[in-house]
Amino acid sequence: MDCLFCKIIAGEIPSAKVYENEWIYAFRDIAPQAPVHVLIVPKTHICCADGITADNSLYVAKIFEAIPAIAKAEGLANGYRIVNNCGEDGCQTVKHLHFHLMGGQKLTEKMA
Ligand code: AMP
Ligand code: ZN
Image 1: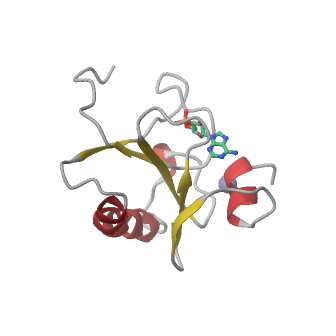
Image 2: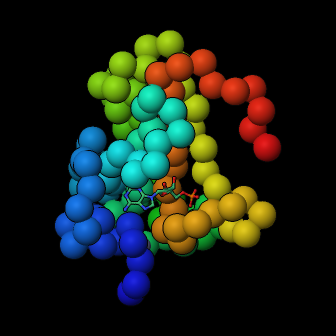
């Protein structure tokens, strides 16, 4: 499958790894929009939030279980934002489910 994030998970395309376990992979966004900008992805191809089902939701749970530890390791003691873009109106550019973890400064109050 021609998926950028599947290739990153497989190590076929380099990335700056932040965290990894059996289910998930986290790496630095190549075009950071905050001092800390990490992408967290499931190690299975799920297209987007719209593709989450009872069969694959464990991966989503594993992502959210890991977020406090990743945030702590990244020094985000003062808080952070988690973002998921889904589909055309959500401006999703990479069609492999991913959550943006952003922080390191006071973020804008606008979300849309
Ligand atoms: P989205 O617009 O929500 O689909 O987010 C895709 C994100 O992937 C963007 O923030 C991009 O900067 C990021 N991105 C694209 N290619 C790479 C790459 N090779 N390594 C790390 N991040 C990437
Ligand atoms: Zn994929």
